[in-house]
Image (tube, rainbow, N blue to C red; front, side, top):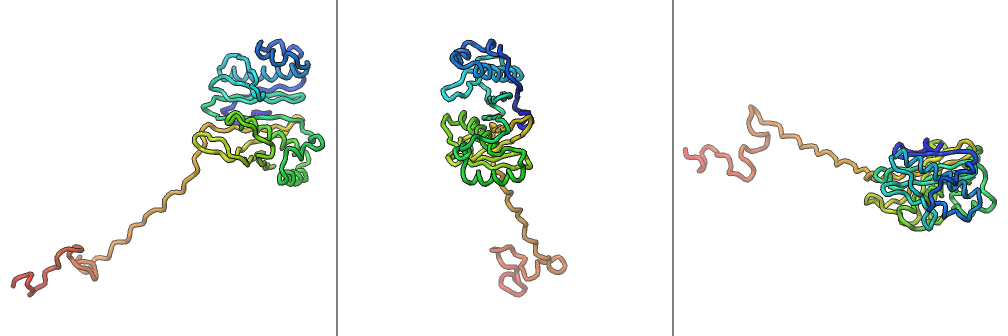
Length: 272
């Protein structure tokens, strides 16, 4: 499902249903140490999503390496790779790409159900809540509050590798296109610099299926330069009409501008 909202440069792997109880057996020692004290369900999800990530890395030609989270919980990818992981009950996915193709990528999956009471007010801005009410009337099959939460998670997962800084929920304002399956995120704080260009927001895609809402942002490594309007064409002035019988233009002189005057019969300039 997730691949349909990602560009060709990204490689994704996903799995559904309950993870195998033996999934933890395939963790690298460094990974196993991270979840050594976690409950079994957490260990299984942690292992299952890394199995997806290693499968995706393999399709890019990378060996199966440990994917240990950093202090913020973000996975540390091999050099030359950008990526993102997500998991919720019944679904997990990982996406990777070469850093020469994408500068950053963020994905998120959530159950297509309403957010718990009180959460929407915490994660959204007043304008976003007003738009969600309108979208709910238009497309009641989508839980737009949950989709908003998912998209903000994808925004953060895209932002953090580029900045190493936190981004609060109210520091990005989102809007959704219900027909195109896209969304835009306007950053309300100074954005990261990518390819020499400071970004003021991200664009992403969303989908609903299988009981889940999915969001993804894939940021190109090279940001297209803004289009520059071409300079207006210079139209040359029309040449003056020639005089009678090929002589000088009407009202003009045969002498070039600034040159001596044309000889006149009977004048001192031309002896008789």
